[in-house]
Picture 1 (cartoon, one colour):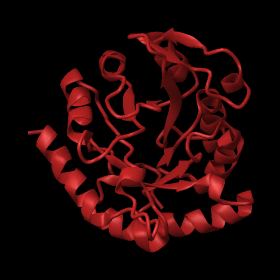
Picture 2: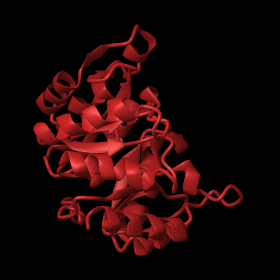
Picture 3: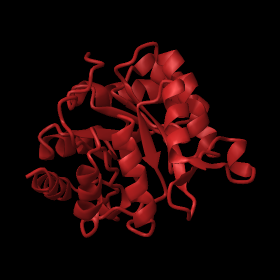
Length: 246
């Protein structure tokens, strides 16, 4: 099974949640493979159960597996690192303080490991206090450049900017995108992204020159009755991504 992301050549790659292996396959096909499927560690009672089930997702999607925390829950950080060691997924979601542990346990540099930072209300600054203990302390606001360099020190691949609340932090997000482009870092905008604001959010990162952009689109494209991510919406988002790169 390939560790190297099948979307490696893609500048843009979707990240959507998969409610089942069947839903993962349907979304993977709808996106023509330009997607990673999020499966949340929080949904499992044990490491063993998570590993056993997530392997099924990986097997059916050419390992387009994104190991998730669960709404950015910092208490899932250690579990994500432990199961990712065995799973060797293409993508790992982590809080800021969990990045080094994940990279060390995974033992290779191909898997994309993001680090969660949050908006601060100040352009050019992000909050890095997103770990199990640090998230309960006063905010750790640092310049975005410092956050990126710290993540690079720890073996991180990208900034997960969450919660964005759509375009509520537009000017802050622009500064984050510009810094990611300047320091050759990936960017993962997350939180409140829907079919209406998706294209503008992606376009901002494209215009800034970000090397790789992985927008997370979750609840807005999930069927409230089935819990499945709607493949037709994934197809719509794929078309929007193509449009931003014209």
